[in-house]
Amino acid sequence: MKAFKRTVTTLLCVVAVLTVAILGYVLYMQHQYYRIPDHQSLKVGNNQAAKLTVGKNYTTTTYNVGFGAYNHQFSFFMDEGELKNGTKTRGKRGTAASKTTVLNDTKGVVKVMQTQHPDFMLFQEIDTNSTRSKHVNQVRILEQSFKGYGHVFANNFHSAFLMWPLTDPHGSVQSGLLTLSRYQITTATRRKYPVTTSFISRFTDLDRCFSITTIPVNNGKSLLLINSHMSAYDKGGQMRKAQMKLLNAVIEKAYQNGNYVIVGGDYNHALGKDMLTHFASQERVPDWISVLDQDMVAKHFTIIKATNQETVPTVRSTDIAYHPGVNYRTVCDGFLVSSNVRATATNLNTNFDYADHNPVKLTFTLK
Image (cartoon, rainbow, N blue to C red):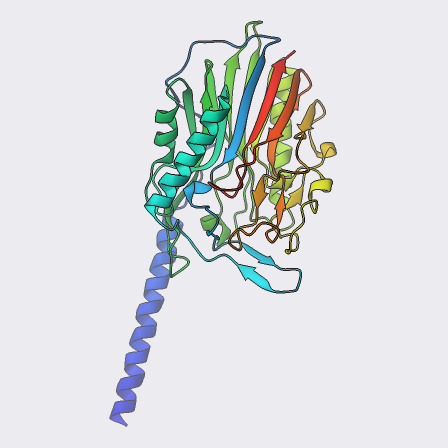
């Protein structure tokens, strides 16, 4: 009987300790949580002097670099899916396989961009000091690799230590949007998107935002170049609708004020219903994807469809490792431009070697 009582007492003590530990961790996460205020001014580093010229061709790229983790073997713990045969799938890892992987993938991104020589570069999901990317400062690597560019960084993921998954914790994260420019930037501003405020999601989703860099043009006007990354873990797309409403209001006002406007980034929407199931795969359409059609965009703006969008996707599913023809793929990265900008786009085929996205290149002229 005494032995039984000791066992019960021990179990109760263990339960009590675990309860206190869990409550303490929840309080820690809640205490660390915050959102960056709207209209935050951003620092411009290594600013360049040149101004844009009307009628001249320029190029910009957008590239979600997936914090340097997404080689072909990587799958992400937050992503779920289902094969067409009914098999449920879920990603495994919370961090990159190794520091070497992050460095190799980041160097691969640099190599791809060096072959393109763009005038502007927009990057999403790029880390400065995160457990998941083995504390590799990807932003610094990109800035040092392109010394003839000004740079602006906007933080959109600042997380306390996330103890999940238990076998490979995602950890603490400092990440965001990086814009590089060969041309002068007069102002840079961070605008915050509305995001879900549910108790769990606030710790796992990003502090979503878009950054606006204002670039002078030789006719006295300005180009507003916007770097955007919309929500992904948003079943039903309600947050993305609210985010699109805000973005539309901002860009339409900018256009009405006489500016040129280009929005590049990862929309986490299929860019057109025709892209939703265009690419052959063995997976069903995942919950994280929504559709962005032209009628959802501000009046004076156009979604620029890449000339090769039917053959080159820009994103792959990450609930499983990458197997061509198996993973779900679509086009969710690209550009919106105002009607005073003439533009064409090309999806750059990297075979998803360095990220779960392919970059997109826009060639544009200011009318």
